[in-house]
Image 1 (cartoon, rainbow, N blue to C red):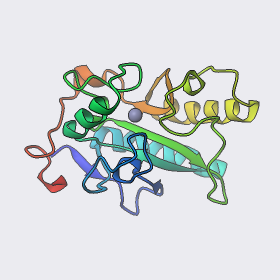
Image 2 (cartoon, helix red, strand yellow):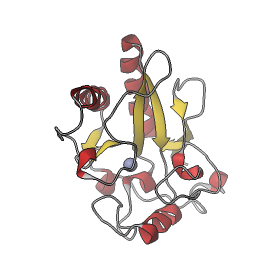
Image 3 (cartoon, rainbow, N blue to C red):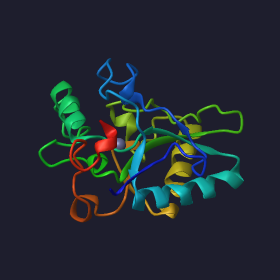
Image 4 (cartoon, protein in one colour):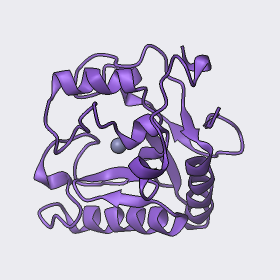
Length: 184
Ligand SMILES: [Zn+2]
């Protein structure tokens, strides 16, 4: 069982799995239950990011973690756009447990301005977009720096998405029924 739960005291993060709620681009829950899991390699990298953020007075707010491949099909059927949704027959790094969608919270627990919401399917969400405010550009670069220093790769079209390097080559998809019985 490579997946480990992230809702533990040793991970000092806020967790808001948007796909377990109606607050996602499909307008309805995609997950039957909100169970925050990551592959242990990704959990180790996440712990490094938490430790780097803490002295800056920042906390991580996690928006999506392990995503059962079954849920990937639901997202694809809603929006079959390969720029923003991993094609399910190839699989997402989320389905391998090695991707995390997140933003940053300040000392008051308020989300930093990142220029767009999570899952905004627009060029404004791309790294390096200069149409968003300078504050948002700075905050994105801060998140990029924390996550890459912690050992994550980034995805140029989504400021909120980070994953382990070579995710598809190194990590198999994890079915929620067979490999992760606790999820169902
Ligand atoms: Zn993602």
